[in-house]
Structure formats: C-alpha cells, structure tokens
Length: 194
Image 1: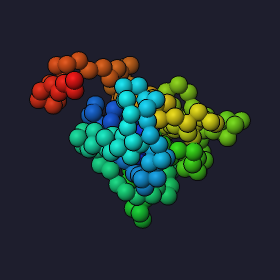
Image 2: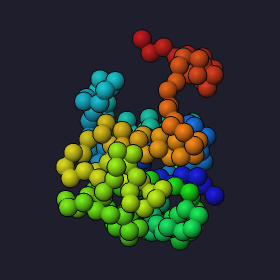
Image 3: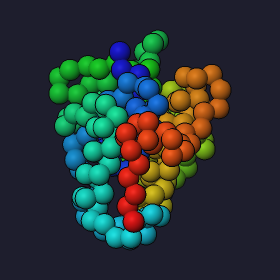
C-alpha cells in the first residue's frame, strides 16, 4: 500500500511528493502533464532569477524521481475513502493509500466526489495544514483559493500538506530543515552553484 498518493504534477503536487518521499514515505504521483506552468515563465519565485515554467516543472520532476517517487502519466477518475485510507482509480486500475493530496489546479471535481466541504466561494475548505473535512485528504493550490493562483503559493500549500502528513506519521511536529551535512550525506558532496 502506498503511503501517499498525490493527484496532480504541478508545483503543489510535486512539492508535496518531494517532502513526503524525501522523508521516507512511499509516494506516488498521478499526472496528465496539464499544469498551467507550461504557459508560465517564472521570475517572481524566490531563489529563481528567471526560468521557463516547463523547465521548472522538469527540475521538480527530477527532484522527486531522485527521492524514489513513482510517477504515472494517468488521469485519476475517482478517489474514495475507505476504512484504511483511500482507493484511487486511474487507467482502469485501483491504488490504495493512507493519505491523498489533491493538487488538480482549479478542477475541484475529485474533492467534491470525495465529499470534501466547500466554502462560500466554491473553493475546497481547508485549514492552514491543507487538510480537508475528510480526514487524511488534502487539497492544495488553486482548488483552495478563489483567485490567488501563483506557483510559490501552490508549492507552499503542497509543502504544508506534506509536513502535516509527516507530523501525523511521526506522532509529533515534524520540521523538514536540512543542514550542509545532510546534503553531503544524501548527495555525496556539496554542490556550490556560484
């Protein structure tokens, strides 16, 4: 059983997958590559001078791949809550997970079919941890915001969902904060991009 299934491969979904996989949770991403980032050019994302949106997404994909995330090019057609977590349907197959992160942009259909509560503005109702009214189901990015659609906000939403999942799994508040020794341990040597 996969620990975390992420539906959507934009900044929110890939950020959630990066944090969960990096910290030891088996993570799967389902994506149809329909992210709005392919129409974007980023020069307002902290730490990035200027990058094509497609190039940004490719870098995120490489990062999640490096941490063992399974990525499928598949449209998710359903998400159901079960006693043990969730069943996600995609390409005539079902996949089980303890947690699900919905990162489908402004498309809120899966959240609605899952029974998530909605606010007055037709956005999915979440707390600061991005958890919906359905326990262990998270919604991120444009689906939780009426108009504030921005890559860095979406990435933050995905990260918040991931940190909440990690905190639940570890039974205490979890902080994903690395120091140079961590990078050296993971990558073998420090890379300095002067």
